[in-house]
Length: 190
Ligand SMILES: [Zn+2]
Image 1 (tube, rainbow, N blue to C red):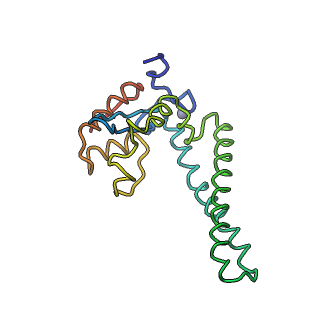
Image 2: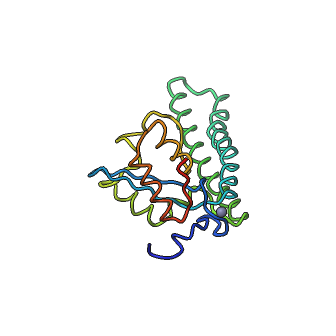
Image 3: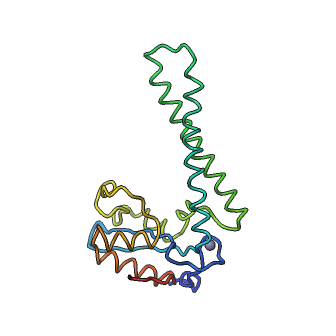
């Protein structure tokens, strides 16, 4: 521990609440050994609820941004051979625009609420260090993309369920528990 702050359990996003089971869990699997480590970013229940509320409108906005350029293109007499490509370009640029727009919107709203948006976790220095070291660490349990279970996991509670359930991975569970202790977040094994 480099500072008392990192083990206080205080919410990393707002700095006020207490990090609990909705704290953000960021697991890393070693490429060179059986090691697992889980960074835990303390998050209070209020910030968790706030982040959850932001997700739904953000998803809608991104879809709308992707759809609008296509709708604008639709009535024009574009040769069939070109239309497909143009549609894809229009959708992709709308999609990127939507992502940028929602990121700014989320950051503004979070700031107004005295907290930070969820994607800010990538600015957490220990996360940056591990994520940059791709030779040693990967962020998926099995090498490659995902493990086919299809659900997005984000919180300590999500990963506890996953490691005790379908993954049946006591090594990762122990790493999660260590991560919680290091972050000052209480961990309930149940
Ligand atoms: Zn908070």
